[in-house]
Image 1 (tube, rainbow, N blue to C red):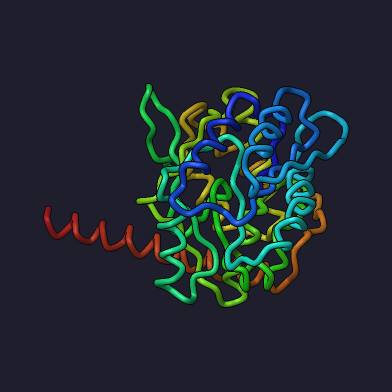
Image 2 (tube, rainbow, N blue to C red):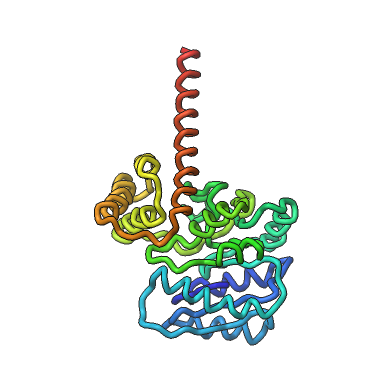
Length: 293
C-alpha cells in the first residue's frame, strides 16, 4: 500500500525502484490522497502498463494530515485482499529501495517464524551522500518500507487511524504485545528523498511527537530521558525541549488516550527496561574508566 499526497517530485522514482525488484508484489495499490499536482497522471501511466499496480483516488479538502494518510491506506488495503498473499505492508511515496530489498526482507521472515513486522534502515542525503539516520534502531521499524506477516497484520488489526500519527509505532507495539518479534535491519537501506523539514516545521513536528508519546502512554521517566538525550541537527536544543513540552501539555490536560490500558502497561514495561539497561551501561562505563585511571 502507498498513500501519496502531491508526490509528483518523487513517486516515479519510487515506482521504478519497485519495478526493478527481484521479487515483485502480487498487488500494489497506490492511493492518491487528494493530490492536486501531477501525482495522479504519473501513477495512472504506470498502472496502465503493469497489471499488479492499481491506482485509486480519494477526494478530500486540501492539506496533509496523519489521519488522512491511514484512511487512504485502509481504503487501499481492500484491493489487496483480492489476491493471495503472505506479507502485506507499506511503501512511502518518496523513497527508493535496492533491487533485492523485498527478496532479502522476505528471506528474514522465512529464517525466523516469529518475525511479524520488519523493514530496513532509513537513509537521507547529507552533503550529496546518503547516510543512515541517527534515530535508526533495530528495535524501531520505520513505516517507510515495511512488511508484516499476514497473520501478524490481521492480529493487530492493521494500521490504525491516529490523530498524532505513529501508526508504525502502534503497529510495532501491538505486534510485540501479541507475541510477535519486530526488527529493522541496518543492511537493508531505504533511501528517503524528501528532506526532513527544518525551522518551524521541525519545531512543530517535535511538539507533535511529544503529544504522540503521551497519547500512547509513554512512561514519564523514559520520556524525560529520551528528550534530554535526543539532539536533532537543527535546532540543537529546541527539538528535544518542544517534544517534552508536547508531552507535558497533554499530561496537564489529561487528554484521553486512544490505546488500551494493556497497550500502555506493555509499552511502559519495555521502556522501563530500556532505561534500566541504559543506566547499567553508564554505570559499567564509569566503573571501567575509574579502574583505568
